[in-house]
Length: 249
Image 1 (spheres, rainbow, N blue to C red):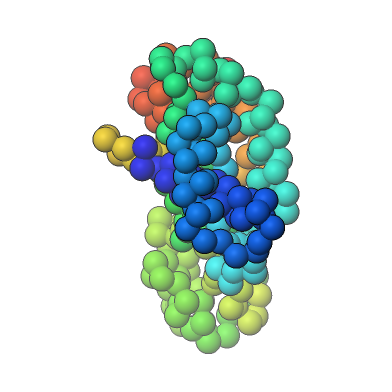
Image 2: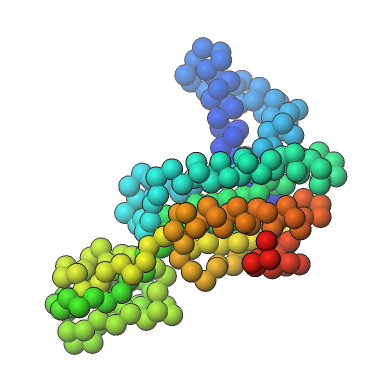
C-alpha cells in the first residue's frame, strides 16, 4: 500500500483545495481538511480509478532531463483509460477496491528517477546514450568531470565510453564543446513490476531504449498481459513472477 501514498496525497490535496473553493475562499484551513478527510474516508472506493500516473519535474525545465516528450503522460492515460481497469478490478478483487489495487505508472525524465519509477508497475526513465563521433576531442575534460558514473575516460586526445557503467543520462553530450560526443539514441528505459508493501520488489528494466511510440505500444501490451494473467487483482510484479513478460500476447 505504501507505493500508492504519493498518488493518494495528490488526490487528497486537490480535494482539500476544491473544498476550500466551494466555501468561497482561497485559503485552506483545518475545517476544509477535516471535511475532505471525512468525504475521502466514506467515499474511498469511488476514488479508485483503476490506474494512476505520476510524473517528475522534468517538464519544468529540470537541468537533468535526458528526454522529455510533450503530452506523453496524457497519451499513456488514454491507453490506460481504454482498458477499463476499474471495472476489471471490480471483477477480480474480493471486497472493496483500494488505492493499492490500481495499476501504477511513473514517468521520470532522467535516471535520477524523482517520481520513483523503480517501484511502479510500469516506469519510465528518460535516457540519452552517447557515442563518439568523428569530431576531434580537445581533451578539455568536461565530459569526464560531469559523469557521476565514471563511465567517460579520456585517453590523451581521445575519449572512451564504458558502456557497462553508462546510465544514459546524456549530460556528457551537453557539455562537450567540440561535438565529439553526440547522441546515439534518445528515448526511455522501461521498468516493469516494481512495488513496495509487505514484499517490496524493484522493477526490472527491459533491454532497450524506446521511442515514445514504442512506449505506448509496450504499455498496451503490458496491460493486456496484466489483464490476461491476473488472478485476484494483484500487482503487476507478482504476475510477472508467475508469467514473465514476453511476446506471447
